[in-house]
Length: 80
Image (cartoon, rainbow, N blue to C red; front, side, top):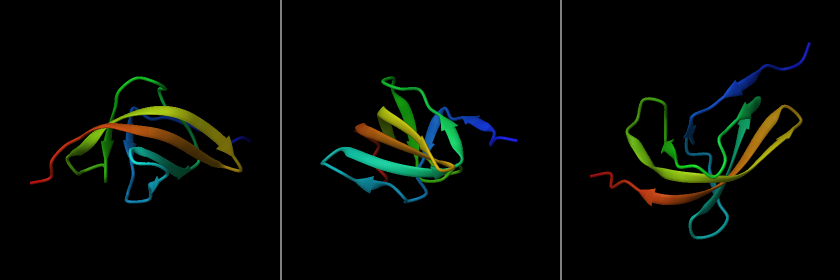
C-alpha cells in the first residue's frame, strides 16, 4: 500500500526552513504533500502560531517519502 497524499493549504515551517537566497526558502516535510503553486499561501511557524508571512511556492518535489518545497516569501508579518 502506498503512502497517503496530504493536501496542505498553508506552510508550517516548525523552524526547519533553509534560506537559499534573500527571500527564497526550501522546506522538507515527511510524507507526500500537495501544495498550491504560484498563488499566495500563508506561512506559519507552528500550526497554533500567528501567521508569520505569505509565500508563493515555486517548486514541489516528491522523493523517498518526503516532500520538498521551494518558496518565495512575498510578505512578512511583524512579530511585535
